[in-house]
Amino acid sequence: MNILGWVIASTIALLLAVPAAAQSTLETVKKRGQLICGVDGTLPGFSLFNAVKEWEGLDVDLCRAVAAAVLGDATKVKFVSVSASDRFDRLAAGDFDVLARNSTVTLQRSAGKKVRFAVVNYIDGQTFVVPKKLKIEQLANLSGSTVCLAKGTTHEFNLKAWFGARRLSITPISLDTAEAMYGAFYASRCAAVTADSTALAAAIVRSGRAAEYRMLPEVISKEPLGPYVRDGDSPWLDVVRWTHYAMLEAEDRGISAKNIDALKRELNDPILRVLLGVDPGNGKALGLSEEWIYNIIKQVGNYGDIYEKNVGQGSPLKFARGINALASKGGQMYALPLR
Ligand SMILES: N[C@@H](CCC(=O)N[C@@H](CS)C(=O)NCC(=O)O)C(=O)O
Image (tube, rainbow, N blue to C red; front, side, top):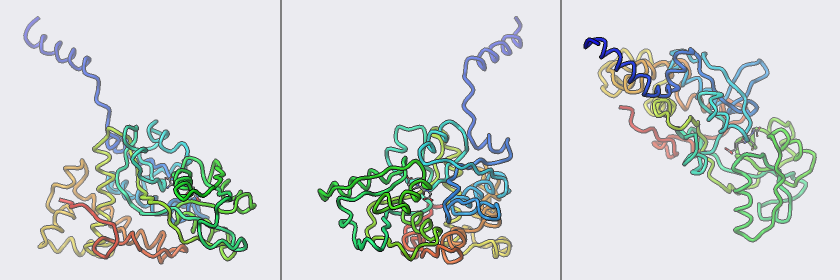
């Protein structure tokens, strides 16, 4: 065998011996030309297939922003509804590229598991709703009662922990879906219903019977919600994480869809130059075009825009920014440096 033949033969042997590295979801999404996003689908404010057959919500817009960052087109997303119980298994199995389903970040959902949280995009907490006619004013008054909740959520552990720590008794009634949970509650099968505060408020408003119910004042848990990706795929985790931070940073700097073109022409601010990709680096580091932030903001908006439109003053929910305000405004939303 001559030298060339030997080189070719040994290269082939080497290629066969080394298993192909698993392709990053980033490459898969680019090749497919579409992002597949696992969402709830029935949750006003977060992910809802609405009456005019369009997807809307904060989680939906996060997915659109990822599509804008990766594909330059926020419309190239397919949304898949997924239940609370099998969301992480379906993500691990590859049914979708990112899970954006009001999913709480907890240690045991990530560490040692096949999925990883990418970032926190909304801070929530678990609360309770009761019929006003029961005259229950505070959570401890529910002692000895039943509480409806949804299976596969963080809520059963939190519920038992809160009552257990106070040596109070409580009986959880665990239903398969949110629909079954509210159905059971409206049919008076339980004294209270518990969920993430915002989901609960949205569902009660949507029932059209909000006047009959009261939300109790206690918030019993931290529910930092955020997108999850598969473990072992850091390029993809980075894309999802920095997409959220890009929207936060844009809000902090007053960059919106309306003024971004004008700002792009003002090239004297070095930070803006890096953010908007005039000076390259951020895009290359992520495996994206340098226009990625421009595309997110131009096509989807900054975090404040998507917050107000979906859950804030521009929505039926009218939630104040509260803890979800920017850190620079007293809240807890803080973008790590995009440079
Ligand atoms: N954030 C919690 C709860 C997420 C969840 O799936 N909540 C359900 C039921 S509590 C939900 O919001 N479903 C939609 C709805 O309530 O309409 C978790 O990650 O476990």
